[in-house]
Length: 205
Image (cartoon, rainbow, N blue to C red; front, side, top):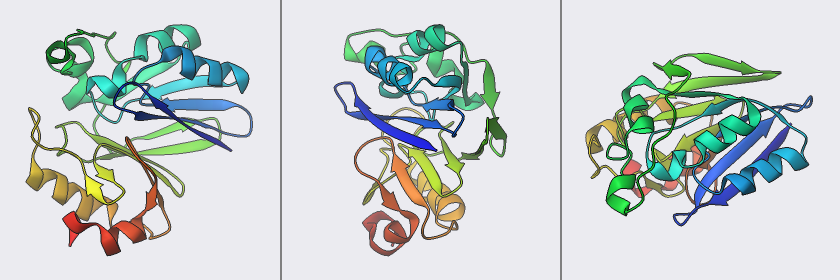
């Protein structure tokens, strides 16, 4: 298995590329710098089947169109964030001075789905709070948490559609129940584990 983390864009968003031993791959949150992402895909000779978005903010969707067009991958996002893909006001890029809109998703998720990419099994966990349609993606002992759970912190809830009560509930009822050795791979910053966050994250005590 291959796991690659690329920090892209001015907000240093984490874009992840995950592939099985046969080069079948998924790209999670291609937020910016499509040339960087596509070079990694080319260098590794990967066949990208899916682009999965943990939520719809611009720093996580900014390179979707370029990666989709270059790889032929299908795009998935939760149904409650789907409008953020196609609206610069919804994805907040309008307010940052560079309006970005992407093609609509090929698949709108509800949560609880399983997406298979070659030998990879990706479990979709709906974790509203940062946005109404925020998701986490579990692949074995890997948990891609987007902007829901960070190392030592949690996602912001002061953007439109955010809810502090919802994000805390999502984390405690859907993520902290996982095995303590599950690796937390967040949308920004360094990785952690479920066990470390249960023991030390000040927002979860």
